[in-house]
Image (cartoon, rainbow, N blue to C red):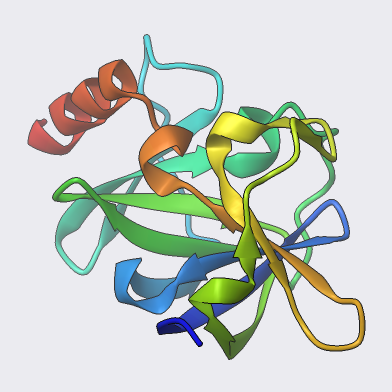
Length: 154
């Protein structure tokens, strides 16, 4: 038995994804954003979250998934990646579960059209349920993190 991980479960395009709770700062309803020029298209802007300027990325756009309308369930999961805070727009944030790190297997080359480099692995849960674990450090590559640090600094 491996290490027990607490994971926030969220949905994108009807698939379940997970991110470790210790990387999540807050989960927010959608907030008004200020667009920042000369940023990648998946960077939707910045929000003022209790006095902190936080860049917001759209995971659907980042992963090349089809865009949908915002719903009452749409959330911003605010995570810390390499000492910077980033908000990720997701379809919904549903649950917190415990998983065994041994249940996480390497990701297949393509999962739902998302390149494997963005994925830490796939967790096999009870009753044939699968949970795609995100590799947050790859979701934002080094150059993009530098851009986001510059946004936070403005």
